[in-house]
Length: 388
Image 1 (cartoon, one colour):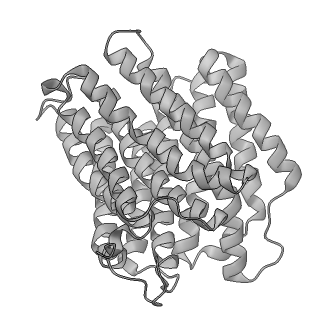
Image 2 (tube, one colour):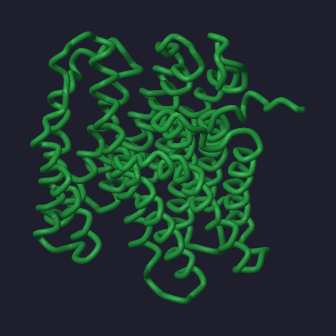
Image 3 (cartoon, helix red, strand yellow):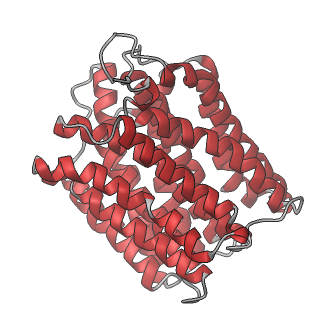
């Protein structure tokens, strides 16, 4: 019997590698397309292509790695390892290649290749969730279904079946990823911080958490159906303030000397910034809608994925929960990338293109550092000799 290669022993191992490698390869390609040095995808407009691949390529890979691992822990049953995990990785890769080479493929093949992965991922995590009646986490299946629907809508737009669906569907997908980060962040950030600093007062406020569900849900729904109305802007700002308020109980000040923790707190704060900037865009021309979007993507998703990929890889391979100095500087680079796509262009709008380029370079650089530091960790057996 052939033993399973270590890299396919748990879902986080290959998918964190794939996500980081994709960020390192795709961002420079996108910048070359953005500056007119290479032809972009003929399937979507350049900006839509960029957004689609950063959400359904990069981010979904990180989500897959996390959920495949977390659901295994929650249910005490395996999700996908070995050969099944290899198949999932190949399905994700097929989607990326199909979109890149869409101009040379039949449209139906592009659609099929890109839409197969999320249902396969849902099946992998759904079986143990349903089998163990894990109702608390069944919501992730619903979110994945909505993500798949948003992806399908983008393809329908590209095929000309419907018109004008691509951008709203992409923005909805970003919001759905934000919901995932809010759910997971609300569970793990206070817990990780409490365990690390030993402060029993660090916890979530239950009343605020209930209000947050309503506020964020209303803000997202209104952004879909009435994106530029004043009440939609107000709802987004209220949601952003509520998101920031929830983490005032999480002990952020006690993490300043702990990069593995402050990166998560800062990433969560960028979710709040994303909603506030989205709301302000309704009321003032100085703030564009893209600033709120990039606060959620580069700021929140960038920092939270990088931070979680760093911590999960250490924790689930039996290593000390402490990042190296290069990884800490990668967190700083990602923070600067977020500023370059949000707040800095407000101050120096005449250099907008330069800020876009600098942000993309910093984003790719941060994940290049992650690869250099974590490839040995992700492909080698656990340091404590345990399986997984």
